Image (tube, rainbow, N blue to C red; front, side):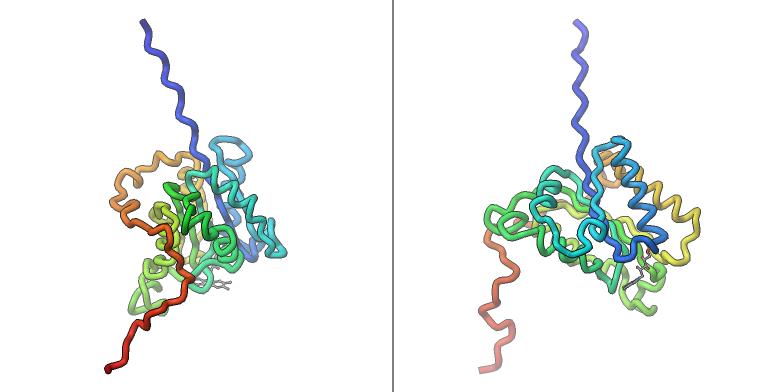
Length: 225
Ligand SMILES: Cc1cc2nc3c(=O)[nH]c(=O)nc-3n(C[C@H](O)[C@H](O)[C@H](O)COP(=O)(O)O)c2cc1C
């Protein structure tokens, strides 16, 4: 008797949250967003793109809509230029509003548990400026803990970021190669070579009642009696 052909695995949904306050002036993030949007339109993979500054010019985020898209996603991508060693303000507001207590963390806050978070960012500073002896003073990794810990608190796995440093000096060939790599990863998730090698995962248990905003009742340093 012939083997029954295995039914294809359902493709994982990829949600790209992109934020650039001047997307029309962008050389790199705009190209990357367009490339993700082309994938979304071609149905090559179930990719959904949310361009926050065009969706929410008034900064009034539709939390229910964003949460519904997140609930369907396996991979959540945060794609943005680095601004002041962090994310642009509307991206931060999206995090504040959408990753809410009781939904993303805290009691019953399990909506994002088991999903992957992938930071895709560009910097103006070249890679060698992110060094203790250069003007950015720290290796770029030093700016990642808030992202990593946000993922951990929500029970997500933080994937190795895709970074393009020295954005202003990147030429067309570099931008094209970077954009192609980005599109390739979006369309082949979760079959990425680097995922097999990931040594870290969901190793920390986050208590259900963890509330970062709760006031600290004990002083951290006590004066000598
Ligand atoms: C308000 C603002 C803050 C920025 N802060 C940083 C920064 O902290 N570190 C850095 O390397 N580049 C910084 N840049 C440069 C941007 O990261 C760079 O312009 C961007 O990555 C280029 O991508 P694009 O072509 O998509 O605009 C900043 C730019 C602006 C406008």
